[in-house]
Length: 224
Image 1 (tube, helix red, strand yellow):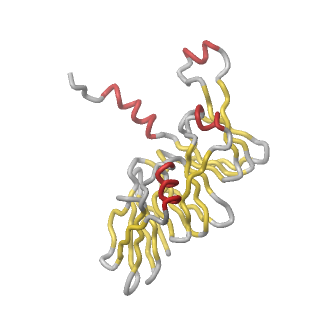
Image 2 (cartoon, one colour; image 1 turned 90 degrees about the vertical axis):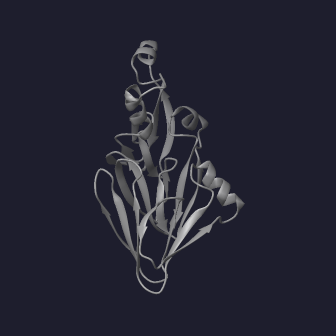
Image 3 (cartoon, rainbow, N blue to C red; image 1 turned 120 degrees about the vertical axis):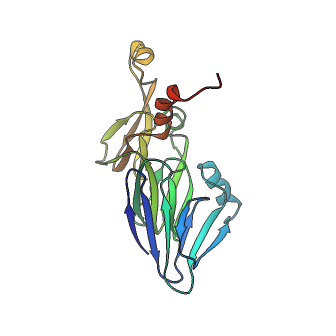
């Protein structure tokens, strides 16, 4: 499989497949394709289906296979931002809910529970995230611009709610309380921040979709 990621700020990943190669996508992810791409909707067992549902994805996935020769299929971003390609194999990736866009058929999408309950309940990234494992190439949606940091063992980054898009599975996530009552109630940053500690790479997004929604909300028409 060969691919190119094109366009901004609404990118699309265009994948060229050899005959017999298969791509896995979530429901509604396909944007356009050649006529010889055959679609099959699969579940993969109750455990995997419920795991995907918990991680924010559909219970069923669509498999697209090139039949009778090379084929092409494209997946467009659903929100202004970036599409990242991850080489899954030597390392696994933990991503925010609903980040998965598509992958080759050797990649497994499953649920990832935060080891520290506080990190999930108060960190803003969610107690349940997505785990990408197996072997192959996976495409992940990022809200806005993406900034990557390589954290050494024991090195940390303090992140505001929702700005953590993905991280290596070797990283750990916890929360840190904002210090000072005045800062909590008047600072506008909330009560908690996410703290991620290496070793591993983290991927931060500049405009989480929930942040975008809060910015636009005052300008939306009301029923009145």
